[in-house]
Picture 1 (cartoon, helix red, strand yellow):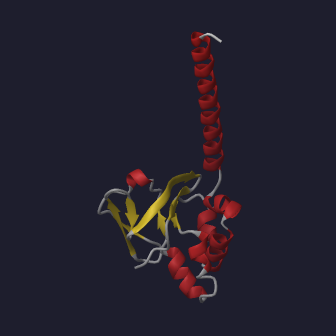
Picture 2 (cartoon, rainbow, N blue to C red):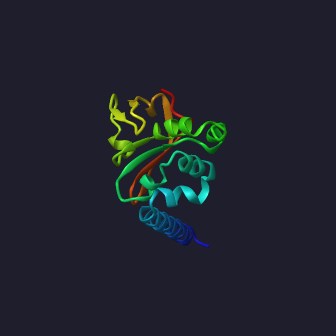
Picture 3 (cartoon, rainbow, N blue to C red):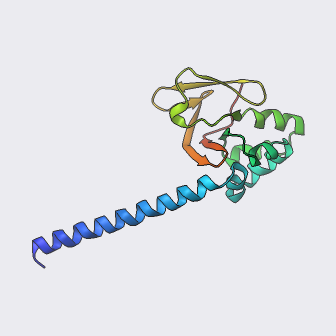
Length: 156
C-alpha cells in the first residue's frame, strides 16, 4: 500500500470511529434527559433508591419540579441502611437541593440550602467540592434536574 493510500485509509478509519462514538454519546444523552431522576437511579443504584424511599423523597424526584441530587457511592450508602428512618431522611435530604444546578452553576463560595435545611457550601479550586466532598461525575442531565456523583456522603 502506498503511503498516501495508507494515510487516507487511516484518516477515514479515525473519522468513522469518531463519528460513531459521538453518535452513541448523543443517543445516551437524549435517553438520559428523557428520564426522571428516580428512573435514572433505579437502573443501577439500588441502595440509593432504598434510602430515598425510606426518606420519603421518591415523590419529589419523580415529579416535574427540578432538583439537584449529590449522589454518594453505593458503598458509602450501605452503612446507612440500618439507621433509623428519621436519620436517613435527614442525611438523604442533605444531598438534595431544589433547583437544577449544573457544575458550571456551582460557583466558588456559593451556598445552597439542602432539603434538610442545612447549608451546602461550594468550593471551586482545582475541582468542585460540595461541603469538602469532590464531584467525581458531574452533570447527569435528567428531565427533572441534575445528578452529580460525589466521592462520599456530605457531612454538616
